[in-house]
Image (cartoon, rainbow over the protein chains, first blue to last red):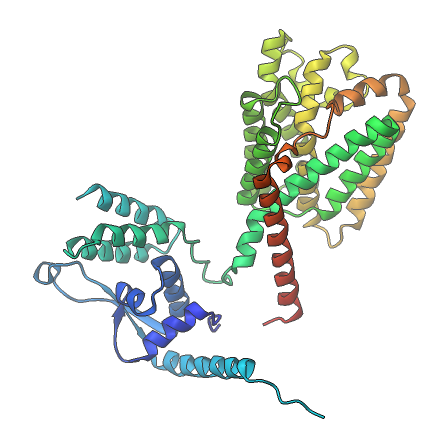
Length: 105
Length: 335
């Protein structure tokens, strides 16, 4: 089931679509979208369940890195296609809503 | 680790109880990264990160649709509205008794019970707890001056706690119709006892008849051989709770049947039978119903005299209207 496209979901999807191949961690996405953690993480969980996003734990040595391993998120191939389509549909709806209707005689 | 870090960690662990397990590890890792970050404002960022998670509703189960904000607001608004409705109907019964006598009051009480039975829904245990909190606030804070001598927190708290705990338990157990009705009566009986123990001790009333306080407070003739003050006090406290029990019990039973009509009919016939019983015992009805409705004025709505109380009530009404319209739109345009 595709996720419901709210403005917050749109922000997250747009941030991920900016570079679909790039992996991002939660704090980074919070900075990119301006969303608080309590809004961002439920969206990430829903996107992951919908198959739009995949997550993986960073394979790094915490001692060498000086910080714990991070969990990275990335759009799946199908997710990127679906996300682009949904974003385009949303933009079309928005432009239709904001364009003044022509008067018919 | 600083106190702010400890607090942030505690908030994250609190939030993580409601989330998939792997999220806790991820959030703790992010907190640890923030802790090691030497930039100014680190503690504030950690606390807002953890606080936002702590107050955020948990993500729904995998097979559930995400709840919308109107639905979440309605979850809070409905128990408050039900409390006001039950108390309003109880006051209507009281005013009818005052103006038109016991028979009319009995009829209004039956109509109130039927109305709540028809509106009845099976609530979740969480909603029962919210309902208990709203009822406690109403019974205690709604009266600037207690309408009965024993309606302070020491009386209301045990009553509402007992009612809330037992009702929530009944709702969770998903009992059959007979067991559900019996459970509601037992709940109200124990609620009456819990709410009247302090009064009984203060008045020197024996506890031997405690299991009968609830039926005696409702049935004609009870005050003839028991403390009128105790039963009047019990009736005033238990009235709105009993109407809420009707709403919940009817909802629980109706969820097992396709239509609410048989139940509504049953309750209506029961109400008529109760009225006939009251009519035939005219000599004692005056005394008993007076005890049931023994308040000198509309009780519990004192908070409406304050602008803040009016504002909160108006807010609840607006929230329910918005939620209702949202629900209607969802039904009209299924996804």
